[in-house]
Image (cartoon, rainbow over all chains, first blue to last red; front, side):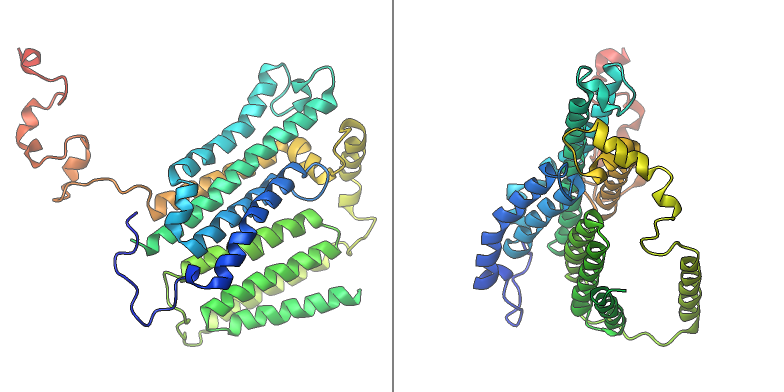
Length: 155
Length: 213
């Protein structure tokens, strides 16, 4: 990534980070968006939400940063290479949980096998793992799609 | 129908017409986000908070941002298309078929509906008895009872982003300048002298004089 090939023409609108309100508000909001995503992720057992919504919200925080401060800035925090690996890691975590259940003597994705003495705890652990997998994959997927779309404009 | 829902439905319809009539693509993108937000409000009123959450975050959030990202690559204004009859007829027929389909659906909140009696009671009772610390039925259904489906959905998202990566280009690979299709077969050696040395092309690394001997 080598930034914009040509500087914007004089009549072009200001870049977004030059606008004080956008810069201050987005910089103040981004940590809370990411924190809220984690809350949604780990509170999905008790209230509305779960891995999918959490992943989308987390990616929205990354994308907001990218929209205001530029694609390169966002990619410095979440490098595309890492995001692409996470894309597969999430799905592998989900299916790996299922395989672990198989190896522990249960059925595929039968979380009771994760804790034979206390199946309800096994279910809780299994749900935590698969929601984590969903969250990781969705975050990586949304971020990847944004990177690909936004990256086309700068080439 | 409660007045709040009626108001939301009316605003939904107004928004839909505004999206269609709008020629400024930026405004249209924002209005589609508004449409999703109104839908999320309706889902909340129907006690489907998980669906509302998804609609608000995906429909009003990510989709709008992705449309905006696409808008950066296109024009700001929609090209005026001449009026064409066939698309209108197709839309009217499809919409009419969907409306006819809703006639057979059970009334909203109907306790006698089939979905309220087949497996939903089992899931609700099972969540109370088998999942001690998980009060959210939606999570247990999505993650445990329907774990295969959710695994498949995650696979769909995974595959979708793979498709985007394939279509919109990942890393740019180095191609020889002449772009001869033969060169793409052995991509490790991109030099143009490759064709001349075709007769001794066993392996560029290990193929040496002792191999030929």
